[in-house]
Length: 350
Ligand SMILES: [Zn+2]
Ligand SMILES: [Zn+2]
Image: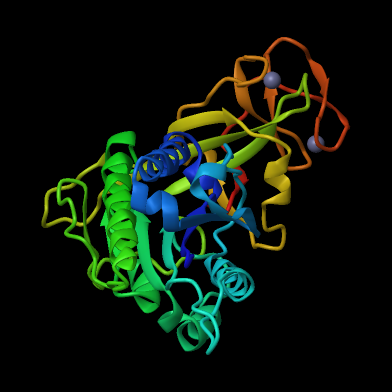
């Protein structure tokens, strides 16, 4: 039996926290359950899931559909797309069976790469390596989620670059239905021994082919979102706070003085695993708290603010009552004075 390998390469960077990552998790499960209902897919499709943030790991190695177990997405700092491509190439070398004079190997793999931002690693050489060694060995579809994607980079990997405007359950569902239909159509075409390479028509309510011109700033940190990691002072457990860029004041068209700030989007519990998925070498960027709009409570102990800062530079929660507490990061005894103006803070890599 010749297998049809399908690789999902998923961006689990911290800017995905909240609704985006939940939507993608649900979306992938929708694809799996859709494929399981199809007799052609059930017979030929093998799926692998690779996650990347500051590091890259295979979450699920190539597995037949009925044997697939539940998995959950990690979250980490950084968007190492270059390393993800290198890893994908190694996985293809290791697990996809090649055709030889004696045996027919697997069908040409399909690869779906998801990202919501721009890479934070040295991706250019990795893209070159991919194009030289693997581009003709797989059919790649790159999917840019939301408004912060640098499509000029994705376009260097594949012409099949798709944009979806919003990372909401509705849009991701629309996308995942299309992916399911694409994989089913491939499994039917390999069933008749004629593998096709062209894309199915896109559902234009949710997605479109990306154009080169859609490219954002060259900054290495995701500019349209700011994230911060903190720890609960009482329980020591980590959380992540995400702010998204927000147009505060729009000037008349002839004056170019729009004013932006960062609005609170979510404050979510994360696991200690976050730190193992993060790139600790990345340069950090500062942001002034005056640019931030809205301060969350602690998602662990519900203390009044999750935005208290220790002298060590790390964030913790604070209930506003006790004068002196122990920093969950550096273990020093610290006391908070009331008030205090705005200050600069180190933000995550997105
Ligand atoms: Zn707390
Ligand atoms: Zn500290």
